[in-house]
Picture (cartoon, rainbow, N blue to C red):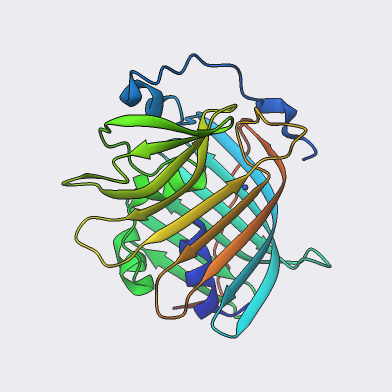
Length: 255
């Protein structure tokens, strides 16, 4: 996994989710269709701590790669990511993101990045700040604009209207849909403010756990020139607090 591919993988994730999911199962919520803005608030999952493990496949243009992903988060504070070989489990890339800074170590290239988050975002060409990254990784709607209505599509889905719900400073949601049993997002397209970039996200739950807080599968795709997409098969997640070890070896070279 080369450094250039990593930047796209990370920000697509972050752009940037069962066997152990019972730890944070959903619960029945009283969603009223006549109060749509209260309803969309119920879709958001905001734990103090979050951990996730997944089998991942990343594709862009004519290439694809597979890897194991581990994610750890502390709300409003830190996002920790570890990328490993899918077969032998060798840890190859580790990332630590804070609201104003970013760090990355690539063990294959023996390189590292250390700097402010805005510079890394600019290099990737993907306009997502820390707050948006956090919401996307939690499988939330990135923004919560005021909406007109929640309209049933069938027994398990609600459409959000208007079809393009936007706020002046935070961007727009297009064709957003809610999974009714869990009151969680099924699908949306997000466009940041003043940007041509968009992220399309889709989520799937297993029939055995329709109330689960987190989906079993996530698909994320962006409209950039290389058409990157990421598929995640979630194998484990919880709201447990876990350490976020990170160090830069002395002999590694700065990117």
